[in-house]
Length: 72
Image 1 (cartoon, rainbow, N blue to C red):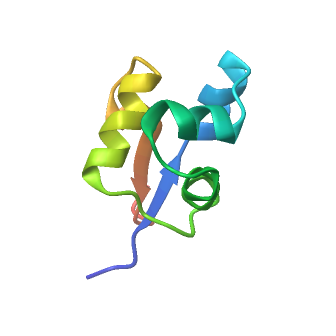
Image 2: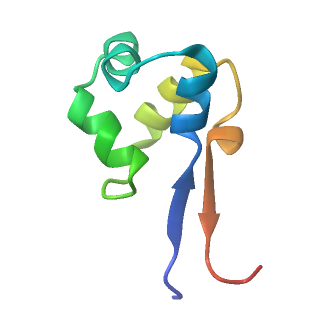
């Protein structure tokens, strides 16, 4: 299997709403550090966390997260 990188637009969605990492974390019930590590790509969120983040931003998971496998 090729190496796959999970990309996200959490920072963009947060900026549009003027939310801090702590605010998003509070809204979905995780720690600020969890949001931070997901944003910078050090942690791949569970399906549940990804769904909660997308729901909080009122969008699809695919709008927040994408994969880069080097094929594009």
